[in-house]
Length: 445
Image 1 (cartoon, rainbow, N blue to C red):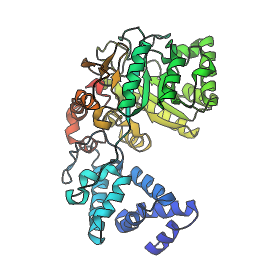
Image 2 (image 1 turned 120 degrees about the horizontal axis):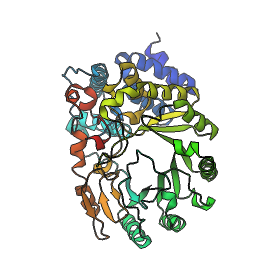
Image 3 (image 1 turned 45 degrees about the horizontal axis):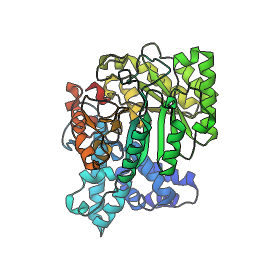
Image 4 (image 1 turned 180 degrees about the vertical axis):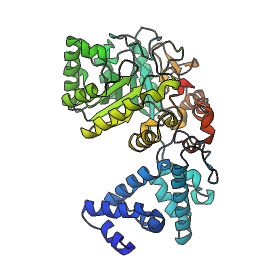
């Protein structure tokens, strides 16, 4: 085992490989080497990134969370994932010991929170008073059309109006977005590419400096001009069995994906998993054929009416083999796998739960909690605000004179759903108390 001076030399090496070895030494015995971590994680550059990424992988609470209402009890013995809680306790013990040694803990905490903002609830108030948190970027989801050329049995949009958004209404909404500092929009449908004003919409977004991303089945024939890389940052290309079984649809899918990639748009392959759709290999092979290195998968979830084809909470554990198969095949092909909808990890065998926790951050929470639970707030094609893709029946008419604060108030009760236990055993789970896990997509709650 190397001593601290030797580990320090590795960290200060100009070779990243030696820096990584030094990092591994620190985390191999964090209790003995924590001062090296806290000394250098705020340095910036490669060392900061290497140390902060390693800390995120070891101490999950640092960057992964679904709510600001922390219930973690340092002294509680958890029935589920207490070994992960022990790592949490270790980090806090070491941080508190370090802060007692240094001359200016307030200044240090300010720098540390810029890297790990999640730490704020765990620090004494005098050390964080006056620290102004960086405001998160606001975003909005727009249902521009309810039309779709496919009829997927699991679709969450099955019950929305088939009409498309009036373009004048869209212009009004975009103007409101600009006035309220919203520069990121997610398009929803239906199939967004079927919107009859798609080209004109892109020009509108481009003029106002708005970036968009969206999910698409990519089987609607459009011109290459629809894939404007100056406006579209990302497309989740939903591949379905219907597409694979229809040669014409498959050809259009491949053409559209190719056109989008040529325009510099990031394309991720998205697969929705349900009872008749568990063959991981066919989807990995499609990703390879398209030269896509990111695969986004999700178990299908219920609409508020619960009349679509979705995976019941009681059946989630039956997908263990499917998920681990996806993970192993993707890893072998150097494809990054992410889980698009949160899952209750306690439903899986321990080894699978640990893999999902460590390798797939999205497996335990979604981003709905961000920006005061407004991250997924939606304006429907008939001009009403909904909470996250029509999560509930609650709605509010859009008005160009309304303030962002009104939107925040409209979304305030989403936090209750986030903090609501999914199952009785949530009360004895560290992941739930530390708000690393929200249990499931909120549609189940």
